[in-house]
Length: 190
Ligand code: AMP
Image 1: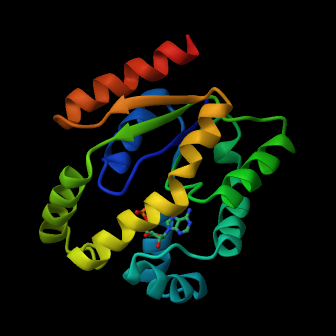
Image 2: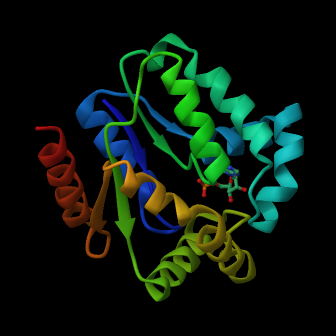
Image 3: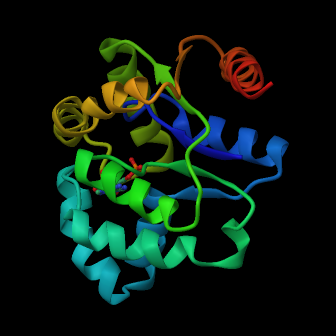
């Protein structure tokens, strides 16, 4: 199965994606995690990524597409995957579609985790205190939400038009949200 999980920063994508990928026995591919690792390793990519991430801005599409193009070629992803944090712009979504089409693949389902803005800010500020992520200060959080609204939200309609979008209410305990997510995925692919 090939899944793209969508939702604003703070919606719980990472946590839910890991759990769903484990249950479905498919690899979880998070561009944010790949990039944070690259920054920690001070690789060439990491050095380019750092300032964008610290400002809450997206990296240029070209950089992300090179990264994803290379990653998806690995055998690990041959029988399915769950993408988390990618695509995030319309050009990324279109590039993903061509990349998949070359292999006769397509995205089966796109769960959208929906959480109100106020709750997102509350959660992200809480996470900033616990994890000390450098992109979780209030100013950067607001920037990331604005970037989501302008650049990523249009993907909701893009996937809705392709009949693969499924909305999942993302408020409540992580277990409750996971039950909804799992039901939505099972209902769609059954
Ligand atoms: P995330 O953990 O998914 O919130 O990603 C953290 C940061 O990595 C984002 O705020 C961006 O700076 C960068 N990033 C992750 N995925 C992408 C992407 N698909 N396109 C551009 N930038 C990205």
